Length: 133
Image (cartoon, rainbow, N blue to C red; front, side, top):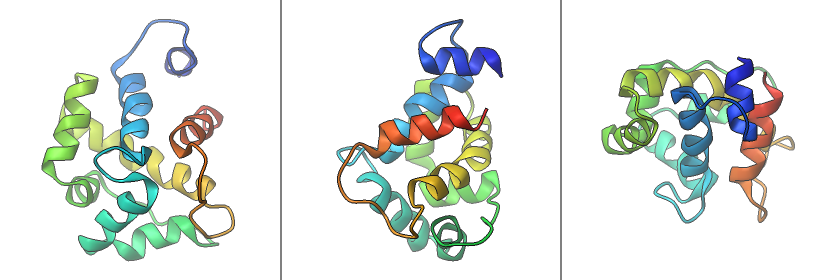
């Protein structure tokens, strides 16, 4: 875990997980990226029948867990492949890591139960990720 955190912060050896969690979170939350930022990412999941899960991450109360298979369903094979390829890991490992961290990151990005407007959510997402370790 220490190596992962160091690599996210810019020091230490780079690991595939840091690539996924760093570049993957940036890709997913970038408003100019393939998802259209946090609103687009959430919409992708809702359109795949996973709205009840992602809504729990935004609203008050406990976050519903998501399985790696549902992450794959929500993101779609092409986007997951893009993230995994950039990180140099399998799609299975990528979806597993995203399933583990995405609920907490989105929950912390939406503390008032609303998607914040403006600001760099990708950078805020990385800051939140650092705090999870």
